[in-house]
Length: 269
Ligand code: GLP
Image (cartoon, rainbow, N blue to C red; front, side, top):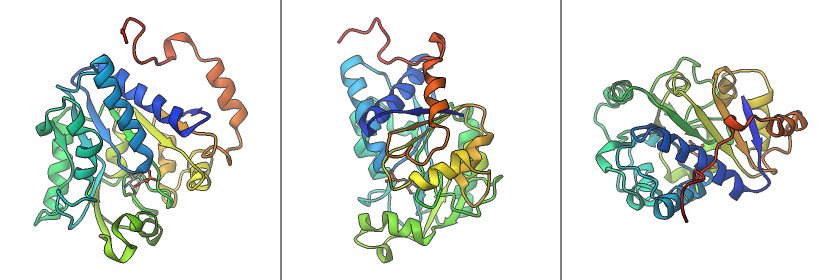
């Protein structure tokens, strides 16, 4: 696990966006796994900027979002489809038919989950998965006790998650209590994962996830099993980590070929 500690939330988001941009530049037909939430907003803003300034080309990119609320029409203002359209898809040259968000309105939710899994497989699998972390320790909407081998399915949200996201709906009672989420095994099959965490709210659970034991009680801790994970943090999110000194040292010692730079040196402003 690579842990990168940036000074500010903005520079952490920039770094995560650079990694996504490099992936797209390396393979214009990349299959991206995307996340939602406030933390991701500056990442998508940066990607839009890269598209406008440097022509970052999304025309052949395919995307799969981690999750969607059950019972929320896709055009609802709090649906993750709306979020993605507003923050990224409508602002870059992506083909909307290449973007997937689970359908939380499907009559047969189980069939929808299976269809989503199949589509990810048929696309060749996720090249890069972006992740945030919830206060409950969730990734996607895999809440504590989620099976480590779980696939895309309907999950019951914890009260902690309802408290966290409730204000966006005008109160937790008004928000859906269920969501379709990629499973933990689905996420772990991505070829690379980037987890971005900023701010103090999730600093506690983040420390458990990356320095504690792997446990279903902290779903994000399963990322310790993944061979290619980069965790990008700001200084507030990193506050409870015990091995900060080593993470800093490891970054300083990084070999040139391991460094990511976007835009590439030859790009003109
Ligand atoms: C939601 C999403 C998660 C995301 C989390 C963090 O619960 N399902 O994928 O990581 O929000 O949200 P925020 O970035 O707003 O803290």
